[in-house]
Amino acid sequence: APAMIEPEPHQIAGLDNDLYARVLTLRYVDGKRWEEIACIIGYSFRHVTRIHGQALHAFWVRYKDVYYVLNDNAIMVSAKEGKRVQFF
Image 1 (spheres, rainbow, N blue to C red):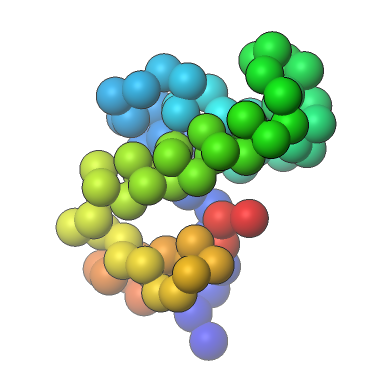
Image 2: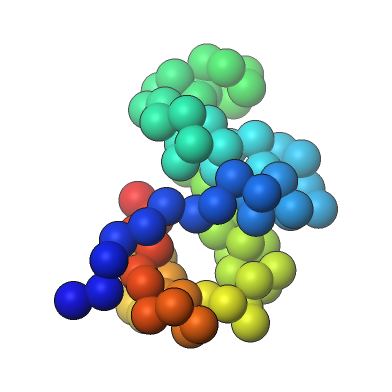
């Protein structure tokens, strides 16, 4: 099976929307829980999960030459390296 990897911080930072980049960084680079992210950025838990979904879509649009959506669980696979990226 392909190795699991995390999204690269420089890829997250490359997003055009600062809020999306912040949410993805807090979650995948800093390892924060949803509740912590909500407190840090000042939004409700529900709104943070909504922003997260939008951010994942923006990430995919930005890096669709590298990743493609494998299924509805927001798993993306590196087309070049054959590695899976698990977003949760």
